[in-house]
Length: 315
Length: 311
Image (spheres, chains in turn red, blue):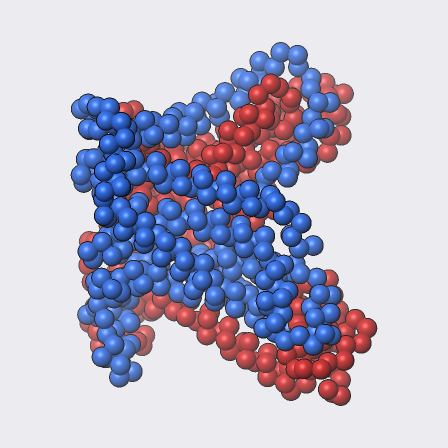
């Protein structure tokens, strides 16, 4: 243990990053002096680091393998799929993508329209309500908040059957509106809770100053609350997009016209249409994955918050 | 997640009171209340009411009391579907959390911040793919004739192990549960990782000073400090498991022979194929009550020890 741990000195600077410091020796007696992190120094430490890298690489590879296989296969003809199952085949068969796109393009259009409509609807409902609930005192305020928070605990699938019957009575089946409604409701519930917390945390001085200047409640909402709450708006938008993209049972049951299918249900139908024609099939999967992948790449942090239903974002 | 923020701020609210008759406030809240009332509360209530009736809603319903619930208790497939949920839950919190936990531990042990970022991104990247794509890909991989898994077994000389993965009643549920292996791309991994990153370095240092090994640290320090996060995950897993059905619908449809039957699939089949709307509503009411009861239990437990949250 006499080997000086030079390798660690570099990590020392990043004392602020908690993750970088979470290194603990696996070799028995260690001299830890001062703030030095007990490291498995020298060769043993480097070896174990290598072991970690190898293990993590294997896990990451296994997790990503189906998607890699999908990507490689999406460029193959059916013949190539059987002759060179494991290896990429040359030349790439781009016609698969044309084939797949013509079939799933309508689902993209519907999904985008439904997501946009749901976001607008949810935001219209939740921003106003959250502002009022956060900044005004009125009888029934707590009751209302409790009634909204309670909805967060109700699993959506439990009201699937009665919701379907309601839509049937309202003659809304096979419309885009019916696809939006659950996401408007879900987005409004989550949005009200997130937004209320956010508005409550805004400094009271903003509102006092606005009052002195004679601003009305509407004015305060439009000029103070809305512009400041864009991050929350973004989270709600992302949650809704991911929700619409992955929603399955609701569009499956409420919509039977092909061009009204959203991407998840559309893909299942597309899957049935193409059977074991793996080239176009996997090309369709790739296309269906691309938009969310792009969001993930460019908005990684918010995306994760969105995936967990705003859970990590609200902490 | 919301309770702390609201209760803490309520005392400050009275000084914001400005209107004596807050009609405008109620007017502003009306749209939200109306939408939630019609599309959230009404279906929930009418679902419970429907569960006491029999017939087809468009034609005519008849009040039958608890008949639907009695049928349920005698329905072997109902018990089978809940037994499967138990298996799914147990699998989820054991096998399903093992690799995420291991990956999180390994990741924070990496010294290079760049490598940490790289692996974190690679490990969670599968989350960015739509769930349907993941399930359909696995279904293709499980294909008995030209599926990837059987092909692989054949090419490494283990052809004898080839199976009809999703078609064999003994294997189907397990095969279904392995969809998404190694399960690292998910909320548990992110929660474990955040929890571990939040443990102060000093604790690890003290632990190393006392000469405790890695395994011992896991059980004596890491896991106890993650207790509250694990509880939250158990809650989320419970709610998720009750709603399980999506992967089963796409791959096995509840078969073969009820091996992968789950309540959600039962409910849909009863309503849309069997036209037993009352019975379907009774099933969904049971799911609803279970979810509510379990939420209350878990949140009660969480409230009792608010001090365990690290930092």
